[in-house]
Amino acid sequence: MTDRPRRVTRALLSVSDKTGLTEFARALASLGIDLVSTGGTAKAIAAAGLRVSDVSDLTGFPEMMDGRVKTLHPKVHGGLLAIRDHADHAKAMKDHGIAPIDLLVVNLYPFESTVDKGAAYEDCVENIDIGGPAMIRAAAKNHDDVAVVVEPQDYQAVLDELNGNAGATTLSLRKRLAAKAYARTAAYDAAISNWFALQLETDAPDYRAVGGRLAQTLRYGENPHQTAAFYRTPERRAGVSTARQLQGKELSYNNINDTDAAYECVAEFDAARTAACVIIKHANPCGVAEGSSLTEAYRKALACDQTSAFGGIIAFNRTIDADAANAVAGIFTEVIIAPDATEEAIAIIGKRKNLRLLLAGGVPDPRARGLTAKTVAGGLLVQGRDNAVVDDMSLKVATKRAPTDSEMRDLRFAFRVAKHVKSNTIVYARDLATVGIGAGQMSRVDSARIAARKAEDAARELNLTGPLTKGSVVASDAFFPFADGMLACVEAGATAVIQPGGSMRDEEVIKAADEHGIAMVFTGIRHFRH
Image (cartoon, rainbow, N blue to C red; front, top):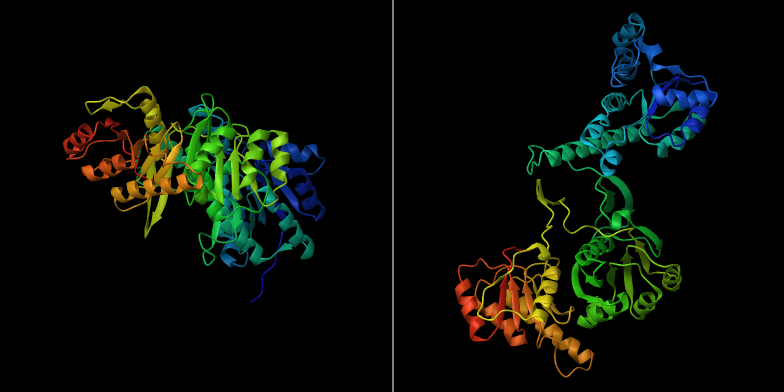
């Protein structure tokens, strides 16, 4: 089968991103290709000393309505859609004076970046491109004859083909460009539709589209036999997608997933109030702590479970300094992520060549609205981000004894962490540090016992006289359906409990707490995480 080369005689260029435009246009002109353009693109090409026809010369109509109408015309779309080898199409072109357009270069109005800047509603609407997507889709449909380029990154590939094929493009390239073009317009429309849903406060629109730009092709997914890639969505939320990787190997699928979990968790701790550190393993915290410095927070977090921390992910909520950089050097770590780092800290971490260092440029807002999605067979589950923060909750003392001030401080801390642990969740905390974490068990009692056992293991590693769960507080992400789960925490040494409440057997649980002198607080908010 032939690759059906198609000679390019005329190109239409209309771009908002003018990166590399004049160089590309000059290269096209040197190949004898006629240039047609619109508005600011035509001015930029002409300013470079190149001959360019305005699209209004092609259509016979001026741009009108503030540029809203300029390319929606048969002389444009006929030139893009006409099948060159089709006799009736060729006759129609001749009868109506339609010249072929063999190459379309369009990138769309910057809707996503306009929204990202927090522009007014009217400005966002004005940056919804109409003619651009229409032309892109037309050219992509007719890829047998027309090449379509939607971003500057593809300029060189087109030039390479034109130079190597006597001014022609191959079908294989045109197909690849067409596939990309449809994906681009799909992602663009997804951004617009999701923005409208947000403006209208529509939680469940009739259609939900998700789109993103390829950020990285990954070696494999969770396991080596699975393919994977990382896509950035229009949402500009500080984290892995905004981070600069200063050093280390390429991030893997699991690295990205775990690093996101770590950074979302550490964001719960206001950097203006306290330094905080989160250590993640397999998307679950294995140590979390606040401290007067990042170094103190790291050491407290590490003490919770040094075994699991090996090969984990470390997240900080403040700029990494030299002390913190030196502290993390003592154990093998896959990734460190923070909003920033000092030059001295970067140099210290730089001595460990395989350690990835990511600087996200900020910390995500735990209260911000947003969407999360996961696939199921034949469908997509979409929900609002869990943006409930314990500081905003009306805590209700359910027992005869109220928590002491220090217990209440640790209860709030523990519930912050519980939000980011896989359910069923039990988090023991003491002195603003986790001392035992039970995650992802089918029974809440099992989570309580596993967390207590891990605290005993940690005590042996640290040569302590007993586990730090003695005198701790405990958080549960959901209510205790029976008293046994809460009593397992009491047996481990917890003196106060924070939980959502709402069980049919709340009175039974409260009674058991009162009998053991335990303080219990209800939040009224559940933090299931599956």
